[in-house]
Image (cartoon, rainbow, N blue to C red; front, side, top):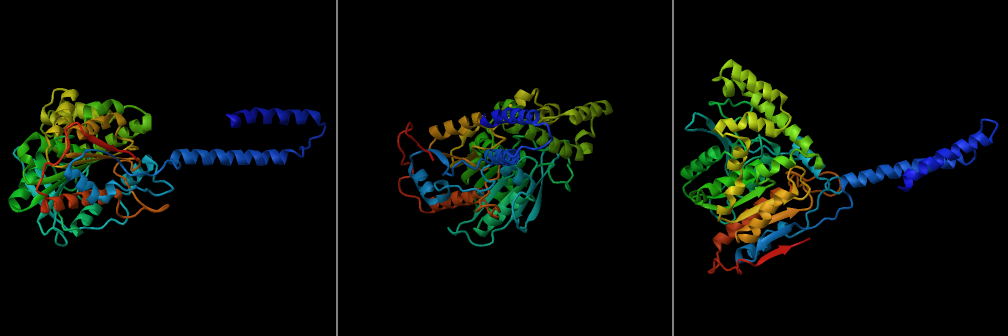
Length: 446
């Protein structure tokens, strides 16, 4: 406010000095005034930078919601990342937008190239699911055979940098990794049916898990889902309790839990979600158009023209979902599609240990959606909800000042939590259900 008031005073002073002098000379006070203007401009720019980069925000451990059980106490003691400060890079890491943008454009720093084998799985409806299988690079610390079954984010696959970085890290810790390639996401794999991946279809993930169980009858599973993949894995486990057989635990990172609740927030400009919505819709258009012949080849020309016309003019994911995606499974409306495909209606059926991770500055996931994991962790003893102050959407970069480390906090948390679960199973105490009454929920705040 003081800066805004200063400008009229300065202007009036310049005019008065011009009238008071008959010659065109500059007052001796003018250089000092211009120096003050420069300082004010620099101060304004620095203030904007500090606000935009959120530099004054503190660092803190994640905010945890969980019930006081023997297992949860063991997990929090063994997985130190959940109880220690998460420290993002000093200059830009406290901005959720920059964390999200860096993940989106770069993926990860110095991404490794793990060597895997691509598997093809024919589906009953004629589709062909694919996943990449990566064998462990050493023995697991427990000596057991453990496989991580991984579901990436929207339109992602095993070749994405953040997946490659995580897989390499997990392999080195003794985990076999199976990574689903979302149907239609790989640019060099043609669709074999008029259908591609959707927000909550679990068919391809179930097919991959079934293959792993058959091929490795002695393996136990760690289920991991990123963003949209988090919705799919939680829905998969909750759809049928038989899906939880041989599953040690599940980790979901940065998912939104309910597409129906999220659609309204995605149309808001708060945190530029409307802009992110437009970018994701544009990416979905490219994926759909790259498979236009497979997806629309069986329709009449009139119907194809109508579908493509609506696709070209769509500016949000909701418009694409309503005009294209919901039709793959015969949903009558967008509301029905979002209700049927959101894990919020199934996640309460998950009884294996479940770690739900979100970031408070995630520009894609509105805070109102986080009441779902908060409520779940307060009611179910198998759930831990971890909310970081910073991290953006699938960012969670760590680093000293400017340059992030190759491994992120997210990578370390997932493997650390999985290691703790495996150790618990190996050295399970006699009392497996030692927990306080159902109403006793602890909440750790930073």
